[in-house]
Length: 236
Image (cartoon, rainbow, N blue to C red):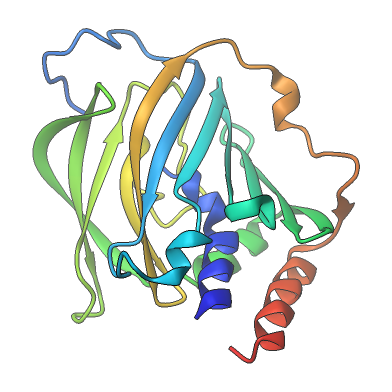
């Protein structure tokens, strides 16, 4: 179960990045072209006293500038670190993954993205027409209904106040054109919930979107095998 949760964290690290309504707030009257978003990460199906809570990440940070954004989160102690960079204008997707001392990075192509999407249970998105706010930002609320009748529906919050073009092209929420501020993801029998807690407008250094030179470049299939081998070593 422990490695299953970690694997879910690793693979959906990109997900993190997946993202209205005008509710009377003037905090973000204009669209933001660069800044940071801090998300609270919870596991609604996991008991609070579960030991997994001590190693799974409790926060995810997204950094964006123009039409490029990163999502990054770490497990306790930094044993696992997952960072995904998405260029939504040019439809480019890359990932840096640290597993203990091993550092690997890959640049996905469209086939890789399509294969990755197969890991997520399918659902239908239904607009609710409801306006709301998250972290002081006006947003719209939608509803996700899974094809699996035994799966619980999810609430989805997204906003047009983040100036990122078509931010969800590489995610299960691809039909949503706004930036995701609140959503659930089911993967490896674990539900993860992401809710924006703080959004700040500030200058972003574009170097943060560049793959680190000390990460070994690998293919998506290689990265996926690494994760599968990690799970197999713990007989999961």
